[in-house]
Length: 490
Image (tube, rainbow, N blue to C red):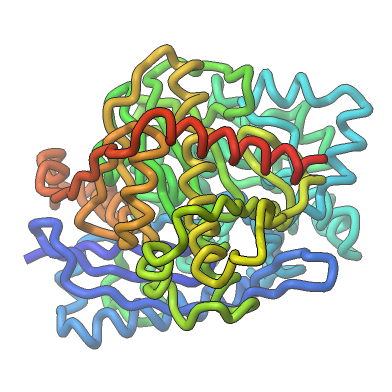
């Protein structure tokens, strides 16, 4: 019997899943990490805490499952993508906390580059909007604001990367400094046609190419790890994907036109567009889906900053709910006559608006708007934001979406899933496995090492939700959402 481990290093925490030789989940363990948020709304993570959690989870996974370490054939990693950090190449120690993808502190750097006329070059070479959402401006902020980093870079002693490259570096005791094509394509530093770091864009952000990791195929060998002494025989790290790319892969969206939405802290809606990129004119971005061997596939993608995080806000900050599970029943009990909307622009809006100045709001509230209606508005906002993306994807790809495959914790909410299919008029297919990012990384590693073959994807079970809402009501609700977004951007 051979086992595969999938690690999903996500925004709120880290998960480790053990898969058996048939691709079934044997055990899942997870650990949260701190969300370090200051008065300016800047969001950071402690990389040392995340690495320590990763080692602890691997040990816990082995101990609780009772699996012999010699039976673990490979390990795959998926990770929160645009989160960026810098560390000392000699010591492996971070020079500063990781700057989380949600954090917009690089806005001034992007504005400066916009005035210098860099935005068209960025768009043409990377497929991305010039935005503080992506890694480049975060890395530039570290170089400009953390003392000693420019000197370390000049000495060849600074590593700049995303969370995957940091974990690979630490898990291999500093022997391997690599990233995969999917993560690299989200840094805003990669020429996505050449699948190489772009020296001109790097120079604009003040980043030397030698400080960046080697870009590899997503299913390559990323070194071997003993997981801090846990494995007596080192285990190969044989797949790395950005979390949303891993979910697309795990969902089996391997053909052009197939689409998925991952519901997490934020959301990523991705459409596989095949071997040639399409440049969006309406606010989507173009990225690499993955590189498998020598074969590159591209995606159109819309990134939403706050979806599941809105539910967390209801629980932790407003204390309107005790758990996310309560939201389904509360939404069903909300007054049908209430027309309130919530726009979760806590740190601006992502796709397709890319407005870092927008601010969140509740609107259309009346004296009768209460807890239930506010909870429903937060859930509805998730579905409205997904529709913003799916409408645009259909127009720009020229393809009609016949099914939306979805994954992530909020997909357990049946109210949300029904409203999602109603407002998009697209059948929604909920994966029977919630953790598609970890599954995609594990399946990638298993296929690369010969433990699985591609037939493994056929075993994934799905629950379908079909549209039921009348067309006139659907359009009326969506017009109200568009008006609310316009207010948030005013």
